[in-house]
Length: 413
Length: 227
Figure 1 (tube, each protein chain N blue to C red):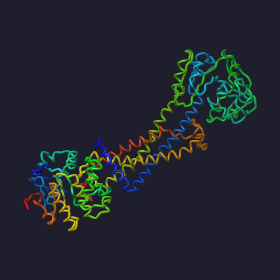
Figure 2: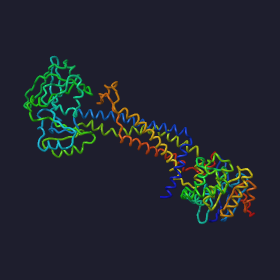
Figure 3: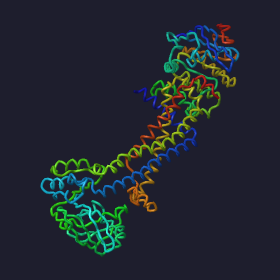
Figure 4: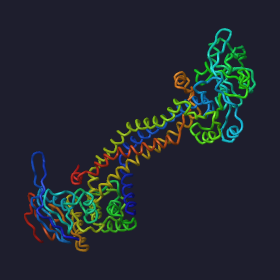
C-alpha cells in the first residue's frame, strides 16, 4: 500500500507537469472538453425541461398523479361507470395519505350548442377550490372568471371552442348529455369564463362546470366519475399510491399516471436513454481531440518514455501515468464545463420564451415557455460518461507508450 | 552484487535489406567491483552489449546472467524491476526528465523504488553535493549546462547504490575538465562503494581510468586486457 502511495505521488507529479508542458495545446483541449461538457449539460437541461413540461402537461390533462375510478371507466367514460363519493376508510386514507391535494370529478362526453353551432365536448364537473392544483385551468382563464363553488351555475369553455361555436363570454349555451337511465339531460349555462390552454388543442374539447351542478343535471347526486390525487412530484408517487391502494374498496380501481397513459410513461422512461445517447454523441466528437492530444503528447516525449522505462518504471506505471494525465485533463475540463452549465442554466430556470415555435411545441404536448431543468442526476451522468469513456479512449495511446521499445525510444531524436 | 556472465551472445539488426551484426558470439564475465571500459569504433557492438546487459535489449541467442538470474529470459516487468533495483544508467545525451528539477530527477528512481520522502530527499541532496551541484537542486535540466546535466544523470544513476552502472559514452558531450571530474567521480565510487562500472567509450582519457579494457570490433571481442 505504501508502495502504491509512492508510485501515485511519482506519476501524479509527472502527469501534472507534463500536462502543462504545452500550455497552448492543453488550453485548447480544455476549452473543447469544457464546451463539450457545457453543451451536454445545457442541452440536457433544455431537453429535460421540455420533457418534464410535456409530462406535467400530460399529467395535468389526465389529470392527476393517481386516479381512482370505476374499473370500466377508462374504457367507457359514461355516467353509468361512476363511483360513490369517498367516505369511510377511503376518505380517511385520502386525508391521511399525505397527498398534496385530492378532489372528485365528473367527466363524461356531452354536446354543447350555441345559437349557431354545436360540438361534441368532454364535460368536466370540478371542485373549483382544488382545480388550481389538479389541472391548473383557473390560471388559464383569460376572460371572465373561474368557477367559485361546487354549486356555481356558470360554464368555462376554451377560446377555440368559443370561436367554433361563434359565441363569447356572457352568452348562453346548452349542454346535453345522458343520465344513468339513458335519458337526455340538458340545461342552459352562461359562459362565465374563457380559458386559453397551454396546449391549444384542449381548448376545443374540455368544458368545465361545477361538480354539484352536474350531479344535479345528470341525477347522480353522491356519485362521481373519478377521485383525482396529486402529489408534489410526479416522479415519486409510489409510496402514496401504495398507501391509498390498501384502503380502496374492491368495486373501484386505482391507477398511477404511468399506468393510465402509456405514452407519457414511455416518454418518461425514454428520457434517461435520450440523455445518455446525447452525452455519448457529444463525447464521441470530443474523443477525437482527446486521443489526438494524448498521442501528440506521447509522440513529443518518446525519448523520455524510453528513459523512464530504462530507469525501471514498469510498463503498467507508464500506462497509469498517461491515464492520470488524461484524467486530470478531463477533471479540469469537467469542472469548468459544469460551472459554465450552472451559470448559464440557472438564470433560464425562470422560463425561456419559445412562443415563436409554440405551435410545434403544442403538437408535442409542451407549452410555449421552456423551463430548463438542471438535475443532479443528469450532471452526474454526463460527468460519469465523460470520465469513463475518456479513460477508455486514453487506454490505447497509454498502452502504446508502455509497449515502446526502450532502446528505440532512447535513440529517437 | 553478482557477477555478469554473457555466453555466446548474438544480436543482429536489419536495416533495409542489409543485416548488421551487433553482437557475434560474445563471451564475457564481469566480476563485482570491476571498472571495465568497452572500446572500439562506431558500430563495433559496445552499446548493443551494454543494452543487452542492462536488459534494455534482448539478444537473438545466447545467455546473460546476473548471478543466478537469466536476464535474457525475464519479462518486461521483471526487467524493469531488475533495472530499478540493480542497475544505474548514464547515457551519452544526459537524458534527464525535463519537467523535474535536478533534485527530483535524482529522487525519481528512489521514488519508484518506494523510498520514504525524507530519506530520498536527504540522499539526493548528499549525492548532488558530492557531484558538485550544491545550490542547483531546484533547477530544471534546461537551466543546467551539459556538464551539470551529466552530473545530475550520474547522481541519479548512483544515488541508490546499484550493483552495476552502465555508462554509454558518458563524456562525449563534456569538455575535458568536466570529463576528468566525472571519471574521477566514477573511480571514487568504484573504490569506495565497490559499484561495478561498465563504460562504453571512444575516449582514450576515459580508458585510462579503467582497470580492464575490452576492445570490440564487428560485434566481437578482439581483446580483453587488465590495465
